[in-house]
Image 1 (tube, one colour):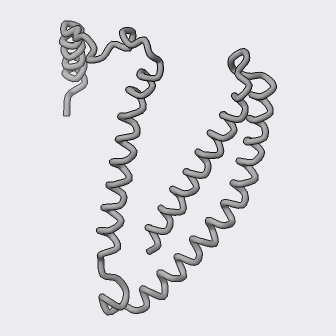
Image 2 (cartoon, helix red, strand yellow; image 1 turned 90 degrees about the vertical axis):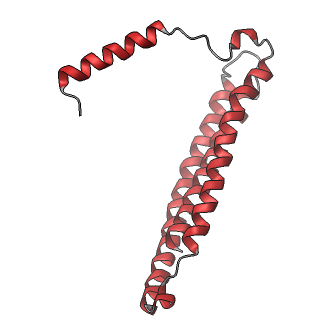
Image 3 (tube, helix red, strand yellow; image 1 turned 180 degrees about the vertical axis):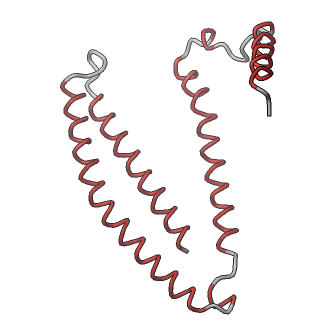
Length: 155
């Protein structure tokens, strides 16, 4: 651990080194004129990270489910308790998703109306639909992630 005086000095030295190494960017977006190509260049790394994350989750889930539990380790009461916890968690999610559906529905309608009446760009008549459906897609994917997470946690 750095002492307070040393840490300031180290930070100043690192800052000077970074300033001296004015590196050119690997890719200059100003050189790319096609907006679609710029969008793809920005989106591909994010999509790749998402796919890798999902593959990692599948790996972890398989590893977790391969472990022995309950009657396999001579504790049959553990299976009974796990079933109770699982049924309780599913009941909780059903109740939570009822309220979440109303909340998302209200915001869906608000976004649809607000951005249809007053679009972000002049002449963009689909802003309201796009914003509302992006909210809906995000809410559905978030709910799915919560359901999968709860299922994995209680299996």
